[in-house]
Image 1: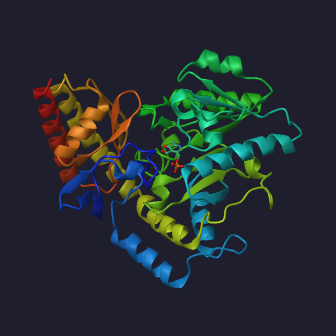
Image 2: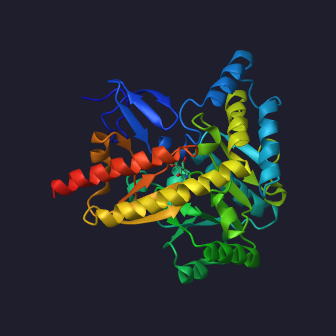
Image 3: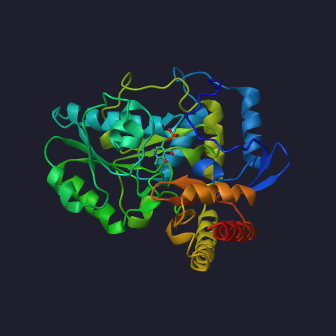
Length: 392
Ligand SMILES: Cc1ncc(COP(=O)(O)O)c(C=O)c1O
């Protein structure tokens, strides 16, 4: 029988009715510790009182006017993002996919307007994930994402992750941009080494190519800096963000240098809802909390402790877990047993984790999680592993 909700997700049999901080309560009043945060979205946890207040206040005044008019919260949030990043200008969206679509359109238009219409190809990396539109599945290119959805959009070339020679071999005067997640998220928490990001920047500069970072999952404080690429000290020309910036309210953005965005004039791109008063009110409040040295230092402090306890967890359960990887509070545990078995067994121990590629379970907690909550999560993961060991 066809389900009323199209079954495109293999959903866990859990229905949550309330959230508070790093905890979710289901319809049977069972309390779960949330190490997924809605897949790296709820950076301030569930129902943060300041976000609730800001949203309520905005809802009482103005929900939506369209981008036919100035949206004051949008301008304020753009000003903050410009102040705090490499970018000079921002286009607001409702999701990560849309932010990436804007990035790709901008890269092509940039070269077109500069008199190089042959520069249309976009280099991406195997294992990457940039969204589910036809454009973005064509960009990532994996069979898992694209099978049956052809014809795909032409003009994307996927390079094996970390294969420098393959990358260099593709570089010519038809390349418009290189797109990379500084840490692959869906692919299984694979950080790109700093020297590779630097090498990409140099390669782009030498060859007149734009560099696009997809920080939709790894950005917004998750690695202990506002954006993950800051660790490497390199800057992109264009960056797509979403997820954490809205703290659970749908919001995304495409940030760019003035040079890259020069071509994005009136009428070239648009969105009915992008950057609407509600979303940008929340985005401003999220930025106010996350973008402080104290908040980001605390993310680093929590992350180093959590990572240590996860290393011990892995060492104690070698038949279940293999290794820990990632950066900040974007951590992955590579599993020996199928990762989905660990995620499912976690539900019995009232812990939520997220499966990822390369047989990884992802731990992407709220960034204001407490040390005690991280200890509790580690204990529940240990109990989960012990239960799985007993069934091997
Ligand atoms: C790195 C990355 N890019 C793009 C996307 C797509 O974002 P959205 O689902 O908001 O369209 C995601 C979502 O998981 C992501 O992790």
